[in-house]
Each structure stands twice: as structure tokens, then as C-alpha cells.
Image 1 (cartoon, rainbow, N blue to C red):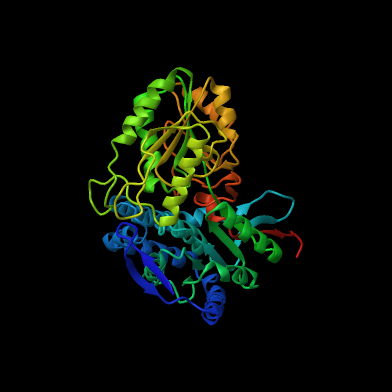
Image 2 (cartoon, helix red, strand yellow):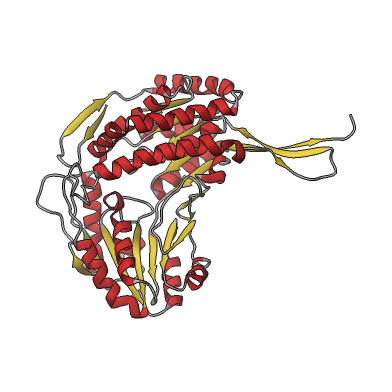
Length: 456
């Protein structure tokens, strides 16, 4: 049984019956059978389902937002924006999949030669709880447009969201078996990956989960796409607009109650900007209101589970033990719910637990460096490489720095975010492969060369 707990009230919400091995086998069979028809369905019919799904997300916006807030604690405003983003992604692939998947004609000495992009088959999506609709939709939209089918194994604390996604696709006209949710624990994942009917696996989650999935998929020679942890650097150059950099830094750190893989986590401040930025950043963080995520005035809600709050508190303690200074917050408020104070640490180095490890919650680590070369070295010292932000008035210099940062994306004078129009993914221990944009449309396809001779 799966029991969801409201992280704001700590009260049990709903109990769900888990799918057993027989249910999984039935779902695999239906997904495989559906693939045979779905891959032959005209592309404009497949994309019409996505367009209708976008309308369903629009229609159900309020109820889906409230569901997310109740199951994992994100603010109601953030939840509504997430539903909007799901609709945007579905519309994007409905409008652009034909261009993304068009044959790539190549000039050779053949009468005709081109690459076509054919679907692989059923894809297993293993998704996390922090963006319970968006992270599943950004995987399913391009996969289904390409002609694949999908099975979703969602995080165990958001089963309501998992089932809601299936409801949206069904209401949008997706044939039975094209998209199915599996309410299963992680103990069944290896067996699902090993099934010969699974032709690809996409996972967003922890580094440990990524390694486990990659190991099993490797034994099965099954293609994988992994979007794992992040410890994104936010570099403030000496010529940056400090006030704006501090405002954006606070927004980036507190997105989703601080529970985002691409939230800025290490704030690397260079030279003359150090004192001014640190104080401005502290003031921005201190102004954030922690409270009930259903309230319009709340900026930061609870963490999704008690263990996540405890893990964050442990990272703060260990960082302080190693010499860090608590400049703001640092503790757990005396209130019901899995809340943690908005916290800022200073006087730490790149190997502090608050900088070396991924921190999931409202904890900011400020690292002061002497010059740009030091900033690049500290940014690249992390084993992660998902996103990075650079703030500076000299945009050419900022872009030069961007070219030297080891990450899947760099945003200049803006916070890191995912967008359906551009690829998203990481390097190093942040994973491999790309979602979204044209690259995402081709993540799970067979790039098949077709060579037509001039001779019959």
C-alpha cells in the first residue's frame, strides 16, 4: 500500500493499492501491443493527442495545482505555474514534432539517401516527486510524439499526481496502453528494465538511483537517459548589477521550496562584489515568508518529507562543524509540518558538505573568491554539472566564462530553467542525454539510414 502524507500538516491523505507483478506484466503487454499501432498512427494524429492534453491541463489547472501542493508541499502559485508549463510542452511538441522528426536528407552518390527517425518501443520513465507533473510530461511529450509508448513509475509519495497524468492522457484520446502509470516500489524496477519489451529508460532522480538504473539497463543493453543531481554554481562577477543578482539568486535558490535540481546552490562571489552581494543576498532571503503553501503570501513551503528536512539539517550541522558561519536561519522551526528555516551559510570552501553535496531545501552556500579564474575553478570542482548562472555587466566576458564551465546549460544574467524549446540535461555525475527541444524529440528513436541506389 502507498500512503500519501501532507507535508504541511503531517496528516495521511490517501492510501493507494500498489500494482503487483501480475499487474506489471499486464501493463507491459498492453504497452507493447499499443506500440505496434501507435508507431503506425499518423504523426498528426499523435500530436493532436498532445494538443488535446494541453487543453486538459488548462481545464484541470486548479485541481492539479491543489493536488501537487497537498502531496508534496510546493506553493499553490508554483503548482499552478507547473501545470501551465506542462500545457506549454504538450503544445510545443504538437506544433514542432513534425519538423524535429523530419527525414534528414544527406547528399551522397546514391539516388536518394536520408536518415529517418523511427520509435524504439515502450519507454520506462522513473520520475521524482519534486516536479511531479512537469518532469513526467517533459519525458512523455517527445516520446509519444515520436511514436513510442510509455510506462511511468513515479515517486511513491505522489501517486495521486501519477494517476492524474494518466487521466489527462486518457481524456486527451491516447489509446489504451499508450501511456500507463505503475504504482510500484523501486524493488520492481530492475525486473521491468530487464523485460525485453522495454526499449528505453529515462530517469530523473538521485545520483544513486541513476547508477542503479544504468547498471541494470547496461546488462540489458537498453538505452538510457539520466538527469541526476545538481549543485549549480551562481557566479557573481565584480561588475555585476548586485541588486538584481541578489534578487535572482534568492528566487533561484528558493524555487520549489529549494527542492530543484537546477536551483542555484553554490553562490560564488568574485572580488569587489563580495561584501555587497553577500549582504544584499542575505536580505533577499530573509524577506522570504515561510508558511502554508496554500496561502498566497507564502514564498517557501515545507520540504516534501520528514527525512528530507532532517537530511538538510544534518548538512547544515556538518558544514558548521567544518567552519561555516550561519548568516541566516540554520534551524528547524517549532511548528507542525516538514519545514526548515531559510538558511544562508558563509565562510566555507568548495568541499564543505553544503557545497560539495547536493542540497535539497532552502539552504544557500556563499563562497567568496579572489578572481574569475578562482571562480571557474570552484565552479568546476563539483562532481555535478547540470546548470550554471553567471552575472556580469560585460556580457562578452560572461559568455567567455560560460564556455569554460562544465555543465549542460549556462544562463547569463538569468536563473537556470528548463524550456521546451532548448535541450536540457547534464554532464559528469549529473547524468547524460538530453530532454526537450529537438534533441529531446530524438532521445528515444532509431536514427535509421536509408540508401536508395540509382540502379533498380
